[in-house]
Amino acid sequence: MIRRLILFFSLFFCQNLIAQNVGNIDNQPATANKAARLYLELVRTEPVPVIGPQHPDAKDIPAGFEAGTTVKVKINGKSAYHMVTSTMETLGTTRWANLRTEHWISEDGTNWRRHKILFRPGKNPETGMWEQTASPFFFFDEKENRWFVYFNFLAYDRIRSWDTPTLLRRAGAKTKGMSGINGEFEYPGEIVAPSGIAHPTDAAASSISPPFRAADGKWYAFLGGGPKPFNDKSGKWWVLIVKAKGPEGPFIYMPEHAPEPFMNPTGFVENPLITRIKGPVTGTEYWTVIFDFLQPEVTTGNNSQLGFSCSTDGLTWPVENAQLIDMEKGLPAGTSAWWRAIRVPHQLIDEGNGLYTCFFSAYDKEGEFESIGKATFRVKEIVENK
Image (tube, rainbow, N blue to C red; front, side, top):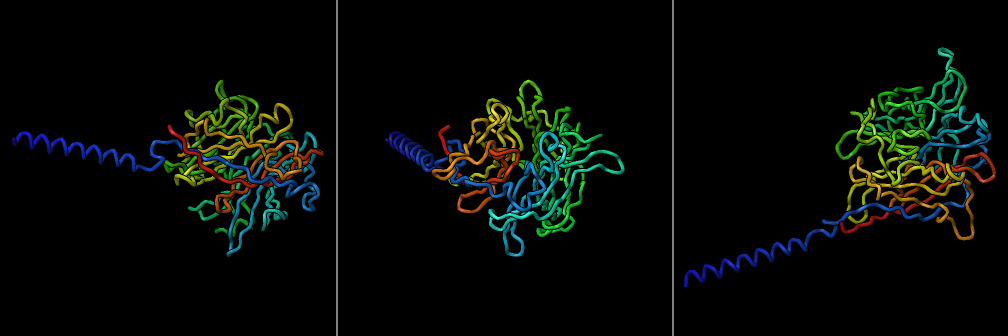
């Protein structure tokens, strides 16, 4: 009898334990065994440029705007958009040999004014080299308490177009604090990604980014090349991830991320710009990139697409997370695209309530001028069973 009671209570205890464990499994968060990724929903593409060839401050840049980015900054309780961008002083084949860096400001994202010319192309009287800058990006270094402009520095023995290895520099604001973005910057700055150390090839520079801190606490940046492939796995217009101890560099080559295949097939990715975004469903912290997807422009001369992807650690970029966005689909009904080819998107700007602004450069249909457009996105999170 005693043995039967012991057996009965043992079976009862085991059944309750199993039931409790099953209940615990059922009570796990809905995303416990699911994969998640972010998705950009295009809300609106403005039907006209926010800065076009008729802008009074653009009369001396006949080819318009190329790469750059825009940040939204609050100073003394007032917010404004700050754009740093390459502009082109000449037309035709010489435009790529006459790039300068400018700072533009807008309080509302629609009405813009040129604030300063930060660096002009020209011949260095001491070295005799033709110097210019390209692909500038704002970055606030919290440790330094100072704004920096990261950019590609180009120096030639004569006036010629951009065909030199990547040489990433940064120029610091002369005034510290958030308000320093309004002042002068110390050009030509300091080298942060030396050519031959950041990547070991002589491929023409095409793609750089500001630094970012990944989930492992270390600092990284994106570098990339143009039509010459990096290797047999890279495709054209490839992207590398390089690393450093801090945003000041020096950034060094990482063979395991050379190239970093954002898409399948790889290639045609240029200027990926990082924005940290929290998933609205799971609360997961993502590293996101928005980038210039070059394939349509390179193959047809026309392009209406931007690229987007996300990562949960800043270093792992699953190709299935890549998304191509047709900017024409965001235009108001009854309007057509004002561009021939979209060129370079700027960083996503958090406007609250899941909405993000993105400015971008694009060739006008009428000529060589690259105008600045504006789009609004909503961030969504897709959760799928593994």
